[in-house]
Image (cartoon, rainbow, N blue to C red; front, side, top):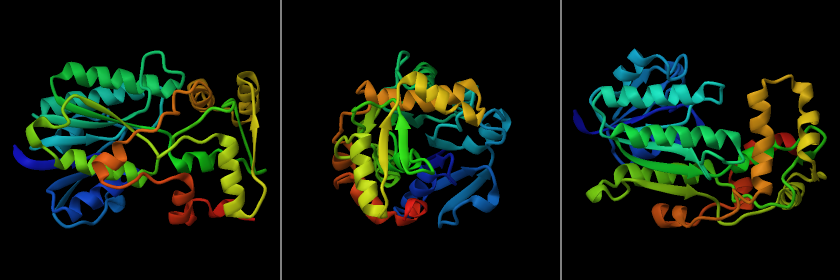
Length: 294
């Protein structure tokens, strides 16, 4: 085992790639795991392993990806009907490979009875990690600011059963900074057994988000609250699988229930700077909302 080797899964994704860049800048010895070699970040001191296809279920490739590593950053797999099965397979592969520690990218409010159905999947994964014997830290991020942008329909309307609930949405950069701090801080197991909510600096309603987006884009963007029944009906046109539609609708319902409202000090405490507000994120990431411009 290489006591310093960190494996970063999902390294071509929004959090994983940012994390890999940060670890390289800190001089960390890392191995990035990607689905396709041409999508791997080219970084100094970094090994590349192609795996994760299909998902985490290719146990042999996952064992190879984790071989010799002490620590694994496990990004959650793509949303699917058997996502928990994939996560469990990845955790078991880590145990088989002799990994000691996993930092898992979970979700805020992970619980067996969470309103957001995908948060229930994260809870099931956390439970499997707890039972595995691995040292662990859970990073429970809120919805991302860019997800709020993607809530906007082609007609400039955000529709969903969020009521006037608050969402303490977070930036991918903030999550990557927190993950970097946790992965590199091994002082006496400082983060072992912790579950950190990773959020923006404050909660905002979707009506407030629409106002901020209207000012930024120069067009009228509105929020139209739906009932849960209306939300399911309005999404029927996509002919998506029931589990996927339930995830879409329940993300709004979780906002209405107040389960994503409470801001956490974790970004400031671990990253050493304030978390990005929606307005700050829009300023720093104009390419993420350019399609909404007037």
